[in-house]
Image (cartoon, rainbow, N blue to C red):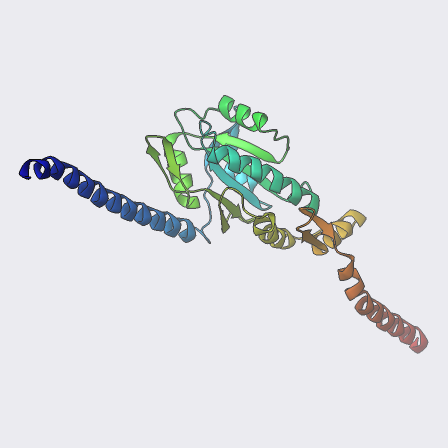
Length: 266
């Protein structure tokens, strides 16, 4: 009877050790997630510096060049064919919806490769091309290791090398026209309004040129677009026009009365 027990003892010990190791790994993973989320949220309100990057054509690109309108910023490594690729493809579709709703020139997109050993300008060029991204206001860039570390830390993007490549937060960072981090969007397949609604608010915060017909059209378009979950697109909401039309008519009548009274007085 003793011998079988002696034979089973190592197995019980091994199972116990695996259970303890699994519990420790889970606790460590939870701690890492909490730290990553804290770093991500702490970046909100932070103004990003003027980092020196290299675009996919091999040309110099300074982050400050993208100020003046909102920026959608995300980080990838080109050897990632699962999460990074899936997020980029989803972001491509969401950006397309946003372009329709807000206008092609209303915001910029920047994808930065953080794997400095592999993410060369040539790789970033191929990365965007292979995912069907043909957008003049979507830039792909890379940089040296020190710059990448400073930029990712500033943007609240946590990453670390692992046996599978890199462990990193699945995140898209929304930056306002002054270069300030405004919002973090998480997940590989977030709903389009999660990004587009705050982006719309940032775009509305920009000064709109009202001296031209196009400026007026753009301002109305920004105000009267709503997300339609059935079609997965933003549509023009005529009910908003109907709602504000009476007020506009009243203002017009008041204005006409003031002008008439002024003429009568003269």
